Length: 80
Image (cartoon, one colour):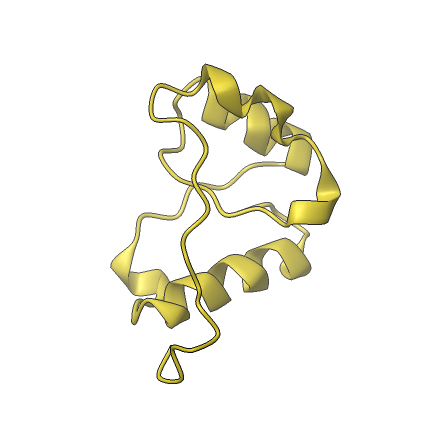
């Protein structure tokens, strides 16, 4: 969770909902800013993170032990 950034957080919740999950199904980790979130991810504080493609800052993902992965959300999946 990026404190004070409902757009980022709601987008992440939408991806969870696509997979049939809610915020109660995951452990939320709060970060003070988008930059702090990336620093936390790179230090392995937060295990997973959804991010918007157009916001940048994804360049550090190569140093993640599991890499940076975007969950598939196929348009053909009408239930999702």
